[in-house]
Length: 190
Image (cartoon, rainbow, N blue to C red; front, side):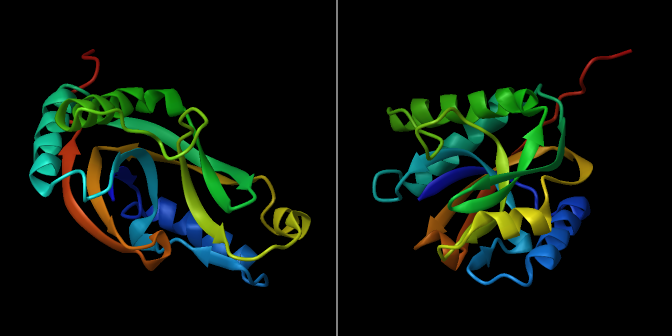
């Protein structure tokens, strides 16, 4: 499956947040943690490799690079904890700042594949980074009590979006990084 991800595992502050969450959740079983290397925010699910070729992937990468050439890096804040029956996630403050990235990957995917890509769910796109996936039925209250509703907020400046191929089930983390499109804009001059 082809995905556009904002890969955030390379940021020390994100790794520290994920580790703090893991430490607080250590007493609980039934959780599968996202490996630090693959901490990410999904921007778009493009489609299966059976219907999108690697050549099309490279064409999308070129198009997204062109579309983002004048877009400056984007600063967001992580810290708020989001709970879902299937996952525990870090919410993204200032998510609206990510719209140019989302628009670029969606435009490129639709142009290259000829069909509309999606975010992976029925609801509107809500940028987040999944810390842990639920692998067992268990009461939420003890998890929420341990992790609370917020970790100390941390800022990060996103300077790229990556095209990734996920081979097999998500929890195997057999990902192939195809390439990244950089946000090269200078922002507002003073």
